[in-house]
Every structure is written in structure tokens, then in C-alpha cells.
Image (cartoon, rainbow, N blue to C red; front, side, top):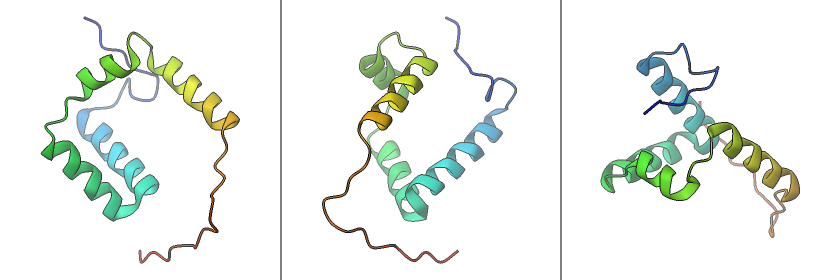
Length: 90
């Protein structure tokens, strides 16, 4: 079975991928959200490969990304309540 990569990760080692992944999670969820996400993955004995196959079937990463981008463009975030900025300590 061939492992699919994209041009971004093709020349990266596992540590670089892990570091970039955690950086992305921190940007997206913040420190607490990242810790919660990692805890959920560990606690639930999450099998990403099996989940991905069940959820996305034979779609490539590029196809999934294109569908997500289309969805985001067609369904912009419109909060029901005013959003209060969260002050973060860096």
C-alpha cells in the first residue's frame, strides 16, 4: 500500500511533522484546546487511519481539502451571539 503525501510533508521527518501539527493545533485551538484534543485522542485510543477510511473513503487529501475549502466558502461563519475576544497570555 502506498502512503499518500503531499509536497509539504514529502521531505519532512516525523519530528518535523509532529512539531508542525502541534503548532497548527495551538494556532487553531490555543494551548488548552490542544491539550484537550491530544487527551481525547489518547484516551479514546483513536485510530486516525481507520477513522479516515470510514469517514472519507478513497478520497485523496487534495480532494478532502478542496471539499473543505468549498464548504467554508459556501458556509461562512456567522455567530448567533456577539463574539467576545479572548485575551491570551503568551
